[in-house]
Structures are given as C-alpha cells and as structure tokens.
Length: 386
Image 1: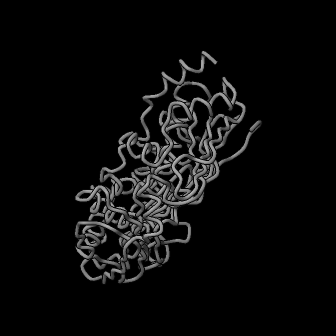
Image 2 (image 1 turned 90 degrees about the vertical axis):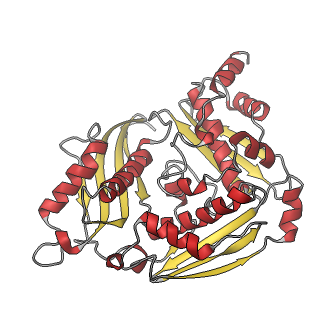
Image 3 (image 1 turned 90 degrees about the horizontal axis):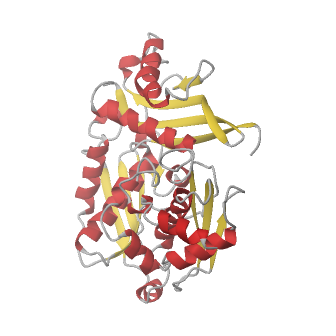
C-alpha cells in the first residue's frame, strides 16, 4: 500500500474466557499425546460463571482425568480465588466426550487429511520474528500484563485482559504507534472515591509499567493511550463473559493483516489440517521471507478430506518477490512435504506442546518448530537457478 495508513491488531491474555477454553482444550490434547501419540482429539470447551463444560470427540488408549486437568489449568492461569468471580476450587466441571467418527477415521488412518478446507500462512520482514508489527506488539503487551501481575509488581491486576495496537505505516513501512488500548481486570484497590473509575495514578502506572517498556521505540508525543475506558474492569473473566474454544482465530494468527482460512486450532490433534497445515503454511512463508525471496509472503493450501496431497498451493508476494509466484509454488511443492503425515513428521507435531500455543499467539515464537528457517538457504540457492 502506498501513502500513509493505519493497521490495528488486538490480543487477549491467558485469563480471557475464550483463551481459558483454548488452554483447557489444548491441555487435554497434550495429556492424550503424552501417553498416546496416535490418539485422536477434537476437544471443545465452554466456560461461564461457575461452570466449565468439556466436550468433543476423543479416541485414545489412555485415561484423562478431565476434572483434575481443568482445575490445574485454571489455577495456573490465576483463577484461584473467589475475588475474581470465578475459581478453580468452586467451579463445576462437566465432561461430554465421545469417540471420533469411524467415517472420518478410515480416511485419516490411510494418511489423508482429517477435513477439507483452506489454510493460510504469512510472513513479512517488519519484525525480527518475520511477523506483522501490530500483532506482535499486542501480544507482548498482554504477556507483560501477566508478568507484572504474577510478580506482584502490580498486585491489583486480575487474570483477564486485552490489548489493541494501531500502527501508522508509510509506503508499507511501520514507523509509529498511533493508539494503544488496554483493558486490565483489577481489584477494587485502585478505584477512586466514586467507585466507578480507576484513579488517574493507577492509569498512569499501568501505562508506565506495562505499555512504555514494550512500545517505547515506537511511541511519540502524539500516541494516544486508552486504559479501561469504561471506567473500571473489576468484574471480568468467566464471571462477565462466556468463553468458547476457537473464538480468537485472528488473535491466534496475524492480527487481521491478511486473510484467515477459517478453521480454529486449539483442541485439535495434528491430523486435523485446520491446525497442522496452517502451521506448515507459516513455516513455508517464513522460510521464503528469510531467504529474501520476498518481503511479504502469503500462502494458501487447499485440502480435501481423506486425500493426502493438497488440491491447491497458492503464493502471493504482493509485488515484493524477487522471483515469480509460479517459481515459488514449484519450490514449495518440491522442498516441503505437504501431506498430513509429512507435515506431522517435519514439524514434530506429535509432541505435547500445544497448551503453550493457546495464549499469546501461535506464530512469531521461536520455541515452536514451524518457526524454524532451516530451509531458507536451500530456497535461496534453488531460486537462483530458475
């Protein structure tokens, strides 16, 4: 895009009700994979005041104590006291789990995709993580909120929080933060005398302790900060809002900068290409950008249920590529195994690492295998021959 424009992305913390559900669903998946790597999991979670419901389809040889697992996740997040309106020690946990459909299983067992669908991957050179800047800053803000809460540096914060960052661009290059929105759950400790708003001192402290250390490089005198703009955020988490697995798919990916395939990730084992092929698409796109074959790279894969190879592979570099999109498609098909089993093997997806993905984004985090750039030099070398 030419000229000046703005892009906004949001993130939510681990204590947000939807993220609570994502973490529970992925904790169930991890528990299955730990003892039964061949287990099949499609786990959904619903949370509301005083209640957690875990359902879905699971086929496994191991046993999962769902109630014990759910309560551990809630305690680790910080829902360990009734002052937050929701507590692991007092909430009810209901389980409604059945086995996977045999009609789906027969296709997956033969190495085919677990569903039809389109999967999107993206990378760009805006940040060292090769991710869009708005979503990376939004993630870092909510992670910072969690860190200062757990360290008791700001002991009045609760587990629920959200962030939003608007970046101003010029000719495709980010150069400043225009607007920052923070919503931080808190106790009554920082309310003013009216009981309706947090104090100006608390608002300034939240900006100085949470926002500025993350955003300092990008902030200028015109940057606008909005903190708990309704006045207060005492009632939060599942007490104030129901949560459901898979409702934060844009937070999980690229912050709305590019399109999304539509499928959610959490609670799904890697035979579900909604998850695994999206991870592979990120891996491919990141390696293309790391190879300096493009400044921006968007990948789309299409799959048919029960079939192994994708029905389509599409690459778009938005005019930033050093070679044609067709050359890149050919390189992708040649050097990446895009079958479900190939993806699982390449990215080592039968390891129980999924709960870690369920908060603060699935991409731009070096601990995950799909963030490696180990194919970049090969792609750069091959592209020179084209």
